Length: 111
Length: 114
Image: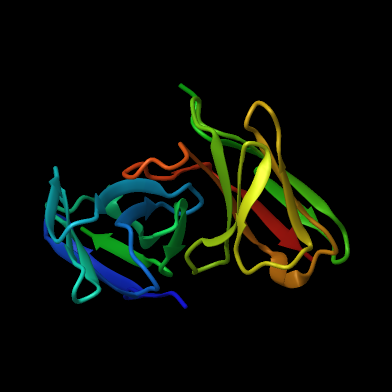
């Protein structure tokens, strides 16, 4: 089976840094993706890791350790518009278009 | 460049009824996948279509069926609706077999079954 775990909810202050963790146990691995989803909207792609290490993309960075089954998304200089759910997803190794999603982490950014 | 579009936005149905949801993929994409997202949960894979055929299916009963048309658009049909089918149904498009290509999601159809 596929098991992807994320914290349910987090709160952080505007301008701060927050780290959202994701652990996974899947039968096979072909990349880990992070999506942002505002309430009532579509998930939008943020970042992708397939090799160990850090990928940086502006205010957002994502880290992967395949041996530990662990990833995190780092958000810097938090803005109020970053309040959203953040979804961790693992790609199926045999189907590039099939993903297994965690339940999402709801991030609340307060002034 | 239009992204993924879905219709309708919202739908209310009664138990036992049937529903059809529609999706047009992002321009240039040939593969459509459907996901069900229950409240407070992550999306769950229903099935995927390319070349007008269902290619893979998640853990969903036969009440869930679909179709892909020659223009790559797709429909999701759900028969004999249950209360538990209430969810956000997301359509995602992509290019088949592209390693780094993420899924592009539509805004979804919110289905409520009463």
